[in-house]
Image (cartoon, rainbow, N blue to C red; front, side, top):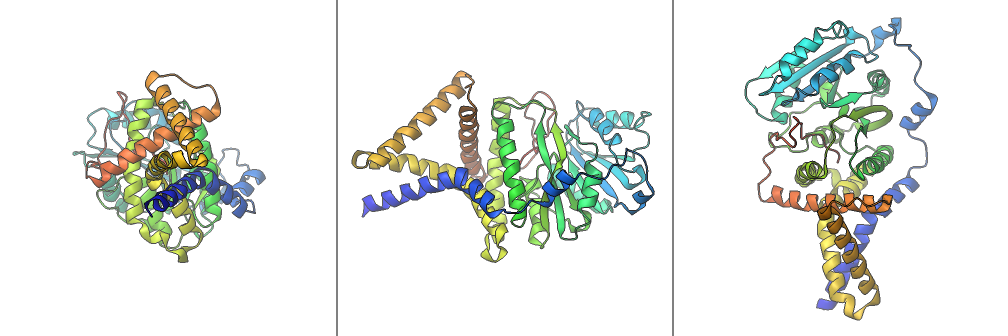
Length: 410
């Protein structure tokens, strides 16, 4: 009886590991048979404006850009200049910088930059909260002050493609869309990082066609302003929970590859690992709090949430079960003997590369390093959340001021 139990636990764990990483993406491709509106719009192109004002601009929705900030002095000037250069009528655009108890010169630099000749047309509001209360508190406090049709959330160190807001405005003409995601790009990606995000972007696009994309990336995403619901104060992955609360209301979260946000700030392996610890804790929290989305009555959303986010939380535990179970079954079963040898080889290789600082050459090896490291962080992050060690506060990851909520849906 014990042998059979170990066999089935191990076999199921191996199956789910393979399904999550390979089977689920392939199944999405099979289920998605028609081009998404995202792909259609990209191929057809957006009507040329020539970056000039048009009479038709009067019909465009109002957009507010909300940027919670904690010590972003190194990036805020570039961000405001970027927003000033976007192709969207200035009388329809508002920029709100909400400084969360910053101890650096973020607010003053923002005001100085907004006064520059090239930025003077931009409607910039700088709010300075005296105490560092956390990103969620800033969002909850600031959102009631915003009356725009659409609200864009954007990280300070992410630059936005020039026609992003115009494309977003056209996309929100569909009344079923409540959230719109951008494509996350990295200016200086770490080893395997860009390949991982390209992989995630494709999955997100396919998920959107089955009902809704899952969550968003804090670099840039849009919501209908009136659909905002205040977040629980201890929310970790706000850029997942906030969009999915809107999906729970019956609206879709879509994605458009032509809307791009480019992350300027590079991260090294240590910084990336710490960021992913927090994401791991947030993944566990959001699975528990958004459990209703697993209701089969929700159709495609339940399937993608279970296969994508649900399995991601449990994946480190399935991987451990697969390893230990294969080791116990190896003496009497050739398949499990090969399975345990393969797993040990991969984990030892990744551990050696990680500890020695060696960078493997092949793309498969780089992807394995990134995935195994990510699942390790996910495992530790989940345990941190269960034991109450994750605080949900802003923290500094690097010597350069950094907002730790640049996460994915991660």
